Image (cartoon, rainbow, N blue to C red):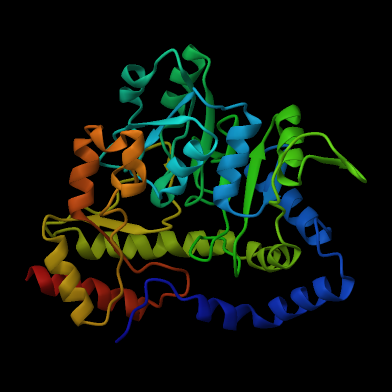
Length: 366
């Protein structure tokens, strides 16, 4: 039996009539730039997250860059984040001219360890970017306490955590702003690139809207130097269709995670932990074992797809060496890099498939 890590084709087949209709309507209207589909998505996403503003942009990476720019992060500033993330988090900080400062993670949840923030803060620190990795929220209460004490801004990287919650509140509503990606692998995904920025700050939202569209204020008038980062109208049409099933998809992921948790409970592996205030959305189901590489081979031999995010952490990538990030001592991150493995999890995974994966993992340890 073949088990893919994700199955975009199954989702497309299930939603094809609605997709076809939505795309045809978008093309028939020929309102292709910041039209009704983008406006609808922005309104719905703001309501779901619980903020006043959601601003569509070209990608999750653009969302990070524009959020940093809108908050005034500039050359000479420092921004604290983690090495345990996709490189875009660090890349965006560098692209606005600031210096990334990486701190270690909590091994149970793989998110930024707030106990390490104080020692990382300097007179140049301007912001913190916690990453809600794998679908589990970072400890936003503790992070915000430190940020408030030192007058720092907080940008939530929610690229892997669509509608995850912390203390009953959706991620993306807990900092100065939040960024989301709609890349094809996400819990809410388009068929190309896309992203969105959320905030409750009216002035910040105004600045973000200027930055995403060349600083455009009126016909032939541009107030600031900005970007060409408008969310595509056709992608928004697709996302509006998929948005109707996001809560269902997240709940299905939680059900599948519970099956894994029970089936793997007595094995010498670490299954995902969930902090008391958190609601996980299982963008990825991540286990940890010192026998990761041998288990990977066993899964491959049994036609089961897997991933190992992040066996090469972002701060250790060659691109980051000129910024000295490889010099950071992050022992928990290093341990995770040697042990993590992601098993297939997506809403269209059948009970039969997940049981096969669990049996295959059990067979390896037997």
